Amino acid sequence: MKRPKPLNRERVLDPKRYIVSKTDPKGVITYGNDYFVEISGYTEAELIGQPHNIIRHPDMPKIAFKLMWDRIKKGENFIAVVKNLAKDGSYYWVVTDFEAKMDPLTNEPIGYTAFRKAAPKSAVEAIEPIYKKLVEIEKNSGIEGSEAYLKGFLEEQGKTYDDFINEIVGNKGIFKMFFTAMKKLFR
Image (tube, rainbow, N blue to C red; front, side):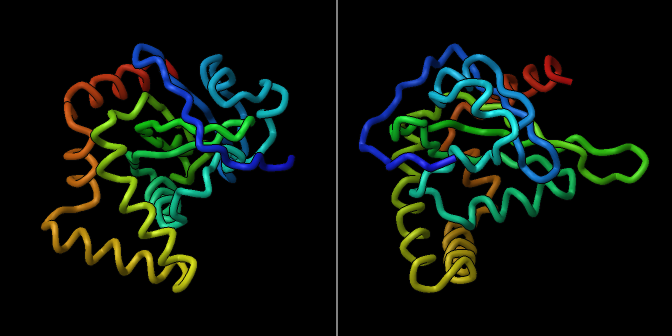
């Protein structure tokens, strides 16, 4: 499937609704709730069987997804502020909690679920210049360069990645309660 050309047009999400998608271990979409289908602009038939990166916006640095895959492949959750790309080229910002479903016998991932909610404007304002810098670094120095920069940035802030994300998302208690409730619904 051909990727759309990004437009400078934002889709505003309903803060009372949530997006859920599931993938197999290779990141191929196996499920998307109605709001995921609606916001992405694709039909359910167009989404199922496609790589989840079909909605990856080019403004997102590759290092963000490397960190995600490194964590969720080990069965660890990963929360990120993500800019996604809709079928028509518009974009939307979400706070996403990625969770792995592990095989109890082998402890290997058998699938992944992403729970998303509209990102607070303050989180987008905090993360967007960092992502822009990381994408710029990746063009010149690859993912290794952006990883080194991000590590240095976090060290300078005196924070872990998780601490930084929790700080910019704000109201982390509200997001934590939301993600906990969603995980119970979709198990």
